[in-house]
Length: 251
Image 1 (cartoon, rainbow, N blue to C red):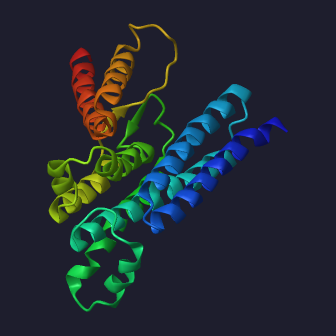
Image 2 (spheres, one colour):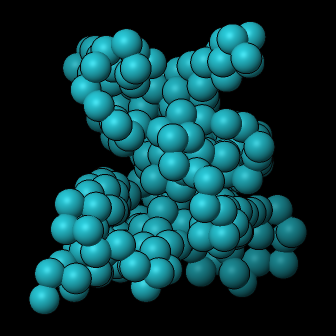
């Protein structure tokens, strides 16, 4: 019976991804973000449960990636589609009823929001590569899909909760969204070596980078809230690059 517990947790991730997809399609992006966050928690817990119960299996690995394709692949693609649609329509929280007009339009620029699904394609490709790589334990090659998803989902949360005219104009700028989509797809499948938040022991000396990252992240989240998410992702990438250079020097 215990061998099924991690898979049941993974299926809860699938469920959260399905619910988040519905809310994202309906342009209720705050609720979509909530269920994505719950899905990412289940994504963390299924691996934890598998290791704690010593029931890791190839089925669990495949199921986990399939769940991530929905929660951390499809949903951020839809959210980017909605943000790009808003950037063309001229504002935050545009009614979903306006979307079919995009499909009926003969103007090529009106098809621009579909470019957001590049994130979904890149996420699926990254997850397929990850399943074939058995070396990504203490570090990851490329940005993980949950981290990328938090980055994309932070944008509507910044729009909704920070409500700053300057931030709104940046986030809803078509060029910014295009650049972020391309950057997201690149980071997901890049050869950047990023450290994993996995503790083999609790000693500070062996985990100085991890503890520093967690402390800085907590401070940022409590001070600038959702705006902290893109800052944390940038800090994570830069810290990993610096750490990689330091390790190379030691070798």
